[in-house]
Length: 95
Length: 408
Image (cartoon, rainbow over all chains, first blue to last red; front, side):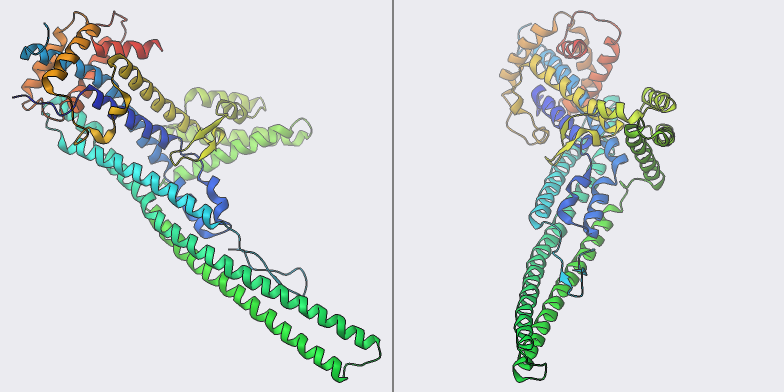
């Protein structure tokens, strides 16, 4: 017996989540904006390095997530089409 | 740390300790929240990747697409999550030692105030004819020495507070530097190019502003922005960052003595919200950030279009809901309702849908939980390739999604 654990809406939810995360990663901006709270400490500099020193990987990751998110948009539609086809095959929906 | 004592005169005044413990705690909270979000996304993608049961080209393509993303997300989450606790400890120490140092500074100032009062009294006595050997003046001098001793002790306490804070600062910075030493860290060459790019364009922008009034600065403008453009070229070639169009524009403007950065700043004007919720100036974003953000916004727009077409309540979907999420509708009712809406949007071309179903069936357990995520992602890409280049009337929901995205 066929069973579904996900539907089109869920797939689109995944896509939206991934796109949001991708945008958040891309717009992380300049970590030095928070430096004021630390004063002239080594901790402030180290935190700036920690948060800002992975820019190349961060943007690559954001791009990958955006790709996945966009693919999910098409996936939601295709999945709905597929569900419709399954419904017809099973006789569960109008033909 | 550069805090210490202000040596404006022979009376050394303990300086206040810079920094804000509440501010550090706010940063720690934001960093932790970002880490949680990244970790949650990594968990979702791991479940997607490991839970996929689709066999065949679709599954393979899906797995390849996800492949390293969870690992990278995990590392990014570690950077943020593991930084929160050391930051909070640093904030506690900063707060305690700031208060201690402030108290010591107040004692120091009080001691010197009392010393000044005693000095006035001693001066009055000397003016009245007493000398330094008189008992009254000697008593005042002894009291003054006590105040000096009090001031010295207060200063030592202040120094002790600074020492303890510096020790915690070194410890916390060491932890953060260790966290930053991972596979995500930018390569040295990349950092150098980024710094050169920023410095070059920055100098160009600043010098360009003063060029009319200070002719020598015009040369600096050209040289500065030329340096940035050269670094941009290296970034583009070596790291696939930026765009040829922008590079060409920047180079042309730099050659004319106009700072290319001004155009870039104009293009990036406006505030943006970071992942941790803080608002930063858009001008601080580089080209690549904007390009990737554009990709993400496009993706989000397409998802929104799809939702509108499918009439799916937005609150239903979360990344974590794909597996083990909220209960789904009954299969028969769900399929029936979706079939009606799907056919309304899809039109006549169901053959392709049947073909996709047939493909799914060949793959084995094709209707298991990963069917939509695996099969449909691949199918979406294939359908997009088929449809690209022709604007036929949408015949499937996916066509409609794609068409809507194109029309926007």
